[in-house]
Image 1 (spheres, one colour):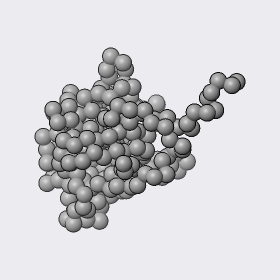
Image 2 (cartoon, rainbow, N blue to C red):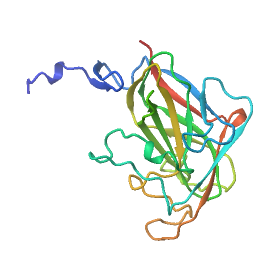
Image 3 (tube, helix red, strand yellow):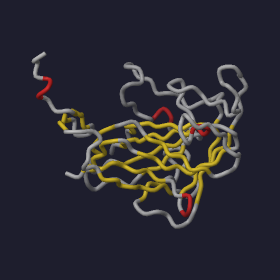
Length: 244
């Protein structure tokens, strides 16, 4: 049909933050450059009031943060009046101790992230199988924390869905979490934030932490989680940045 569709750009994306549509020739954007940001804390990154930080340089000293994931009390999906398909303020989760929060200092210049952010996570668990979620968030100057993109990995499928292998409890494992595709401009005065947790229910089924078939076994087990940063186990988020 000669309706003009063949004359349009192959990719049309909406840049959140700027509030503008933009035409592109291909996806992912060839001009995107990888910008890596590292996690750091004094060991108390739980909740937004903790000491979790996002920094530019790899921390020399290795540290870790801990939280308990109880599938009987999972982190709830923040539904809105439009279901869960729109960004939501993360304020209702602010007091949860099973949420690790890492934030940058207020930005001094605009940073556009367009593509799939990737989190390289070093973590250990007391369970033979568990989940790790990573959520990228835009923190506004007024304190609103609006989610941007989410990714998840199930420990047993850390090497892909075609390869299943349980983990050794207590062993530090490298996980690669690819977040959903996004396009957002973080503006001056805003902070880049990354949350790490182990559930988003009922958007995702809970991991029972037992390695049993969750559709056939109702047993739930509590998992002790550790997230490492710095040194040889530097957890990092790789952002696809577009320069103006």
